[in-house]
Length: 122
Image 1: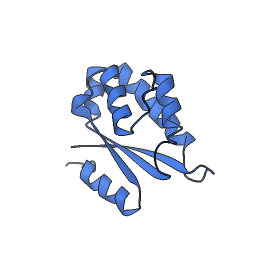
Image 2 (image 1 turned 180 degrees about the horizontal axis):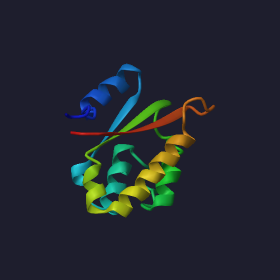
Image 3 (image 1 turned 45 degrees about the vertical axis):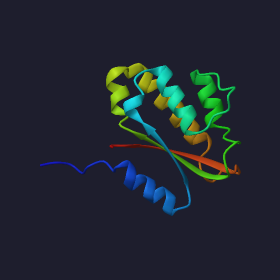
Image 4 (image 1 turned 30 degrees about the horizontal axis):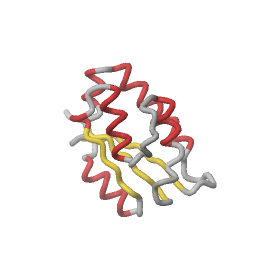
């Protein structure tokens, strides 16, 4: 007996776009360590050149997003398990920052931008 398959990035992106969200994809195949993961997130969300490339700077940028249009921004991390297997501590640290930032920019706040983080299979 098999369980339900996790949603694909394509399906998640389609649902997000249908509700008017901006979709940003992360390709887990290119995210093999902390540096490449931070770089990929920065590129996906068009972080400013001043991004400090550390976890504190990641949180600061994720909870700002003022350079992006107002609305919901959905960050879809495809194949996140690859980093989890390669560097479990790095994965947990980055997931923690993403979760904290998502809570900080939750819908219902008076802010203009919201962050949703989703994990998907390719």
